[in-house]
Length: 318
Image 1 (cartoon, one colour):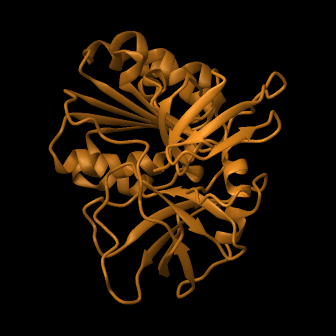
Image 2 (tube, rainbow, N blue to C red):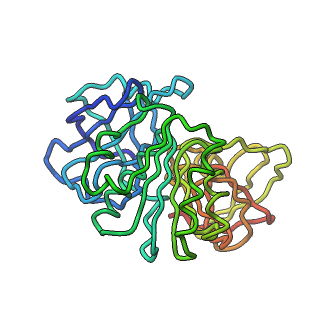
């Protein structure tokens, strides 16, 4: 829920298409600290709510920093945030995490593609603060399109841990990352964010060495979902209310139409706002916010896109 009023205190143009917004509260109350890898919902000038990763130091309490890439093909959220000025007000939600630093890892590898640098930058701050063993690989088409390059090259705690890869076609990425693999163990963790094909390739490179559950992925865009074979099923809330979910509607939409208050934001299976508990039944996971291990456990479901493999699900709303 975007109910925190913030002021845009500072804007920096990182590239021709990427700007950072520093957000503060007018009353001076803290906005942090937050957990590295977190994102927030932001309601822009048009009222559209979009999710943006926090890319400043997680220990920073006075402000939050987001980076917004102008996406002409998007539904207008990024374009709107490229029209705001310092002093304008926005509404945001509380920081929340789908991507987090593994506390028991012996080594951390961060692999960013393009604007995917944003959540990984906050994780780099966190890991540097812990004096953890980590390295960051940043793939981007050209220096002109790369955000935070000066910071990554010159900040003391990052300098020796950052590898910048400019202009390397995706076919060359495996060769560039292959030297990293021998130094990893089953206790190592990899974190990646970027285009879907980029993240699929990173997963394919590292999962055989460290296990799929140790590769953590942050999605910015939703995959298309084939709904042609969808069947109706029943959802029962832990309060006893029962609802029929037809083939053409999501659990979230049916609950909302019936006056049930459900947390929601992207409604595309990315942000995790509507994730709820599963008490009985088998979910048909179609989201990109739950981890592979979470999906295998079958104890949670993203109500906006996922359905049921069983005739009935019993759920509890978080």
